[in-house]
Length: 484
Image (cartoon, rainbow, N blue to C red; front, top):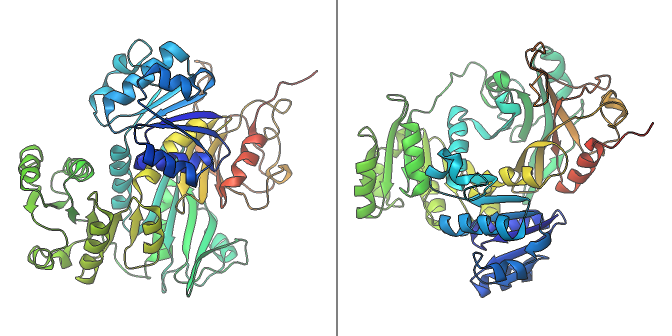
C-alpha cells in the first residue's frame, strides 16, 4: 500500500516505523529537514520537506496514486486542511487525521465529504485515557485489549506464586475450567540477564511464577482469569480508589475529567509543576479533584500527600525521564501500582521488568486504530503488543465455501502458520448486509477446536507473536471470485 504520513513528530515516527515493517511504500512530509533525514537513515522510506497543505508538496510526495493519507502534524488545522486538499485535488481514497479538539468528532458535517473529508479522526490522548480506564477497571492486568465490540478481551497478567494457575500446565487449566470461554495464547518468560523470551504454548506447557501470560477470553470471564493467574488463593480484591496523577497536561486533564464522572468512586490528586496550568486545571476540573502545584519527583511532596496509600500512581508528563523517576520514587515509597508514560521505545524496553508495573507508549495505544485501516480484507480490530513485536488481530470470515478458504471448513483444515494462535470466535454479531426481517441470535464466544467449522460472519481473533505473520492470515481470509 502507498501511504503518505504528514508529520515526523512522535506520533508520525511511530506510525512510520510500524508501517514500514509491513513492506508499505511510505513517504513522510515535514517542514523539519533534520527530522526527515533521521527517519530516512533509520527506515526504508522517502522524506519530502515542506508543508502538507501545499498542493505542490503533496504532488511531490506522490499523492496522485496514494492509497492512504495519515495527517498527524502538531496542529489540528494543518491535518484537516491537508485531508481536504487530498480529497479535492488528488482523490486519495482514505484520509485519517489526528485531531485533539473534540468538537470535530461530535459534528459529522465538518468531517464528512462536504466538510474536511476525513474518513477517521484519531486522538492519541483520547486513546490513552480510554486504555488507562480499562487498566483501572482491571488493576492487576498489564494489558487489556477489546475485540468484537467489547464482547471479548485479550489480557496479559504476570503470574504470581500462590495463584491457582501458577505452577500448573495449560492442559490442567483447560480440564479444570471446561465451561470458561478462554484460551491461553502466549507466555513470555523472564530469564536472568536476558530479555523476556516467547514460550510456545501447548497442553504440556507449565505456567511459572513471573511469566507474562496472554489470555483471550469472553469479557465476563476476564476478572476470573486475572484472579486465577495473579491473586493468591483467598486474597481479597483490591479495587483502585486512590489515584495520583503526575502531570496536568492534555492526557492528565482528560483522565481526571473522565474518572471524576463517577462521583465518589475515586479520590484523585493531580500534581502539576506550572502554576498557571494549575489555575487552569482547578477552574475546569470538578471540585472533588485536588490540584497540587509542585515537582512530581519531589520526595517531600509525595510523602506529604501520602503516596504510600495510593492504589495507582500515573506519571503522564511530556518528559520521559521525569515519568520514569517519579514512578520509581513513588513505588519505593509504597505506591501499590505505578504507570509511566514513555515515548521513547528504547526507554520502554529498559523499563520492562523493573519496578515500574506498566510502561505505556502513547503511539502504541492508538496504533491499532490506524493499522485496521491499512490491513487487507475485513479486519475489524488490531492491537500492537510487546512494543510492536507481536499483534492481536480480529478478522471477519466472509463469503461461502466456494469463494472463501475458511468458511465452511474445520479449524484443523486451515492452512495457518504454525506460530499463529487462533484464540476465539465470536459468532452471531449483526452483519451490515443482514436482512431486516432476519431473526437475531445472541452473540456467543466460542473457543475453537480442530473440529469447529468456521461460518460466514464469524469474528475470529488471532494472536501473532511476529508481525510478519499478518500477511499469511490476511491472505487466507481474502474472498475470491468463484468460478463455475
